[in-house]
Length: 285
Image 1 (tube, rainbow, N blue to C red):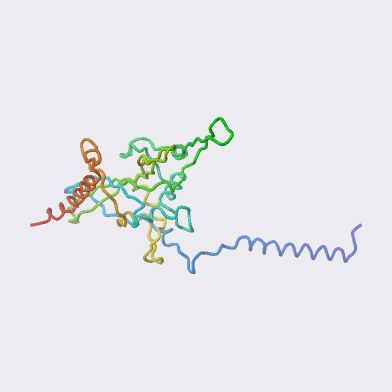
Image 2: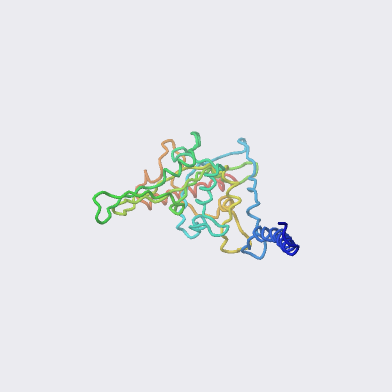
């Protein structure tokens, strides 16, 4: 009943072999995946936002609040849009913000709450709002088929920024702070495909997003070894934008009192030049 000595010997050898093979299999499963570089690239992922100079209210001699729009179809602004799908460590700005909002790291506010006074919108509810319903007729059917299309980050092709320019008397310079950013997407007629305008989606408080943006790399077309983050992209002004609104008692945008697009563009340029000239005039003796 106990088996022959040879049988016991074979069973012992098999058990010992299994004991030694298990750690080896575990080691093979736990091995790190190859990295897409010959050195470990963690500079951006471990970065903290650059600390901006502290400004006291008493040091502000002059300030001007403006709103600008960034169109990602311009070549200089394309790092905000590409890649359309996550590629390696690179993501678009909308992908980064969507993940941060869903994870509870960044709060989103309504399109009319650019002062961030109302309660934030719950993340799941926020992105459900952006799904679209399309109805169409299929061959042989008498009732239309309705399909819900979920929101895709690649739909965002414009960004609005709210910022404040000011003269800091202590440092003797003109400076700017971004207060909020807001994505916007195109709106077209479901039947004709006609372009109807741009739909703003929500606002986020820019200082609250800086840690998330500082850890998200942006493709640097000039030097792959020197990667920058989305925080660098905004703080160091690596984008081109057009002024569409300035602070006014009636809160109107430029296009409401300049109907011609060329006149509206020139008005935005006038405001920009006024800001730049103010610093020169202030320190001219």
